[in-house]
Length: 225
Ligand SMILES: N[C@@H](CCC(=O)N[C@@H](CS)C(=O)NCC(=O)O)C(=O)O
Image 1 (spheres, protein in one colour):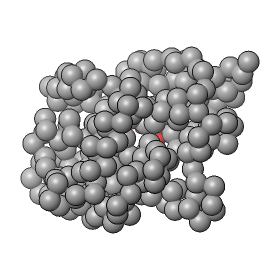
Image 2: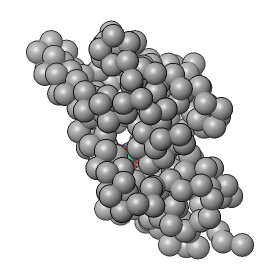
Image 3: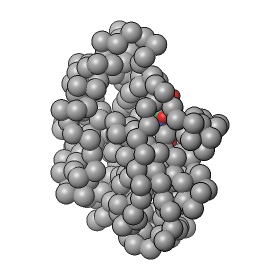
Image 4: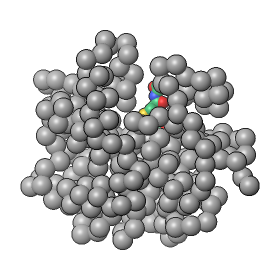
């Protein structure tokens, strides 16, 4: 049997993306929890470029970067498709996942951790990207249509983590009146049984972020985007 290992961190949305993809495909794997304040030799060996989780190890071969890992999983294992078959739809899924990953989520994250003018600037940027996502979603249940796909998995941060941090930090962004489609998606997605089983508990995340908020600066690695 193929040997599959995942180096991850329980509170990391990018690490959880990979777990969701593996579970969607029904792949059995060994999960190795990393201490991000004291990274293991193996993590540094398998991801010497970024030194970050997640890293998937398949038969001894490492793959880093969550979106790349998800595509690898989709191509390697049978089961429900994560990316669309149609080349144009596939390109579009990659486009929205990239926007989420590189622009939208960093702006949302920074809006939470900044204050004053900087927060307003980050909020404005996030709103611009979220508006595009709102119209992409239209009346669809998920970004992937009737089933969860690449964009839904990539956006797990918006459905779970963001609401928790936003509440702790006093930021309001995705409201029912401004983003009705996205609000419905958050509800539908976060409450679907498959997603629910694969998200960290809200109480544990609240405690984790409260500790981050109170910690001295150098330990706030989780603030970085
Ligand atoms: N673009 C990467 C991001 C990976 C990433 O930022 N991982 C964080 C956890 S959320 C990490 O390992 N941080 C440790 C560090 O920055 O030293 C991906 O999608 O996999």
